[in-house]
Image (cartoon, rainbow, N blue to C red; front, side):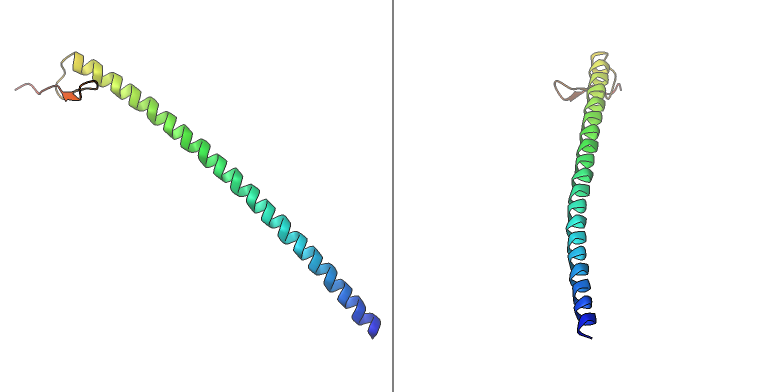
Amino acid sequence: MALAAACTEAEQEDTEAHAGAAADNTAEAAARAGEVIESGAMKAARAVETGAGNVADQLEENQAEAAAEGKPGAVNPTTDQRVPADN
C-alpha cells in the first residue's frame, strides 16, 4: 500500500509540474498573441489615418479648385470662406 501511495504522490507532483508549465506556456502565448493583435491594430489605424489624410488632401484640392472657379457652395481651404450661391 505504501508503494501505491508514493507512486500516486509522485504522479500528482509530476502532473502539477506539467500543469504549472502548461499555465506558464499559456500565459506566454497569450501575451504574444496580445502583442500581435495590438501591432495589427496599430498598422490598421495607421492605414486608416493615411487613407483619411489622402482623402482630405484630395477634397481640399477639389474645394480649392472649385472655389477658384467661383462654384457656389465651394469653400476656399486657405480662407475657409464659402463661395456664395448665385441668386
